[in-house]
Image (cartoon, rainbow, N blue to C red):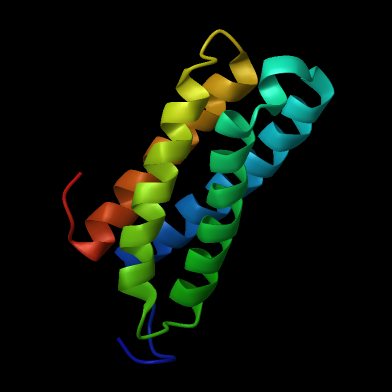
Length: 118
């Protein structure tokens, strides 16, 4: 992969999934802060914050076709999986359930692009 050039369909799918994931995680963080209590525990907030940062960086690197983008996609897949797992612990909350699903989709797209297994 070189800087610039054409973005493939698979790459665009990962970019879109990353953008949706970090957007959803930002919204989930705001939701957690409003809820308080167990929602603001670092076992929940940590994975959400990590996913925001990594998914945003991954989308950026894919868009500019950084030579490190595929490596970042593999990292993003792992981080998004961890975030989905954390959100699943609050599956009765529709915001957190939605976030878990979006993070899983992001993880799958990034894993597929990077050519790594779960």
